[in-house]
Length: 358
Image 1 (spheres, helix red, strand yellow):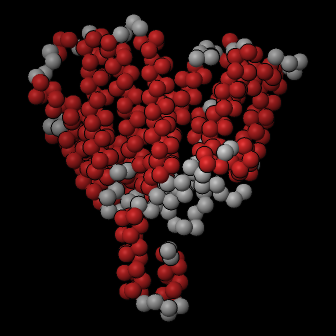
Image 2 (cartoon, one colour; image 1 turned 30 degrees about the horizontal axis):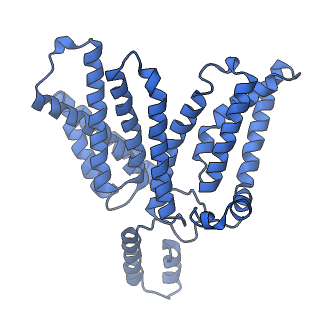
Image 3 (cartoon, helix red, strand yellow; image 1 turned 45 degrees about the horizontal axis):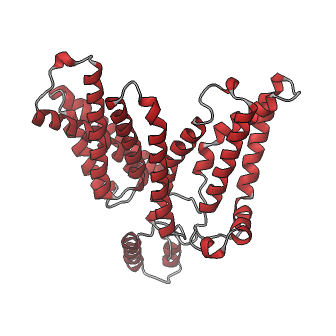
């Protein structure tokens, strides 16, 4: 499918009339939207996500932030507390144009966050109004405060769900995961405030694994990474990775770098190596990025336990970490090709994201 530059070149060459070019561009845009395709066919980056198409998007996003801030501030002057409704309504109205019609990603991200915050506060206010206001003298009580925080997080989750159901913005899936994590955390803290740490790690690890499974599901539905499903998977991987890696490493090491033993460091490096293998199989680098700090900390510990002077350990760690990252980035496709073609059964490999030429 031709892009705008190709259509303009065709018009200048007299191959097609300007009016026909505009009609064709409008048709192709509608066709891509209807078919779910969001990328030009020439794009080869397996993890490319349309975030900013130019400074125009940044310019519009700044305008959206300033406009919503002005609406919130002005409304609050006229009637304190009403800014929730005005800001949520304005953000939703702007999303109808920027997200649903123009499909501009960065302004849509701003609007998604605005609806999640302002809409969540509005839903929270409505629930309090319907259920009756909780006496203000309870403020400061720990149980009261936890209930308020839980209700606020749940309201933000509800607003985010409504936004996603309407606009299907991939970023909103990440927003849903973050707000859901807050809700889960508040539920744990509400029921067992003294035993939260006992259940916290397993629950959040399960949440991360579920999000990861959802991300892989989207990846498997679009192995060519050509539709909006790939963007859905990207944002889910981006939120699942910290949950899985951080909690997973936390079972081995939860204190400062100075307390990390050599055995702990080797275990962490083995865990990161396993994460790297999974990342190669599904062709997603988010999990590796989430594990960089822990890999660096483990590497620092191993180097520190050699005869190298303490002052140079940090510098050597940075050198090795940076070089390893660059080598993996350069050799990503050859490494993935080797694993999928030489080490993995083909009846399983063909279900994974498309193998691209090295």
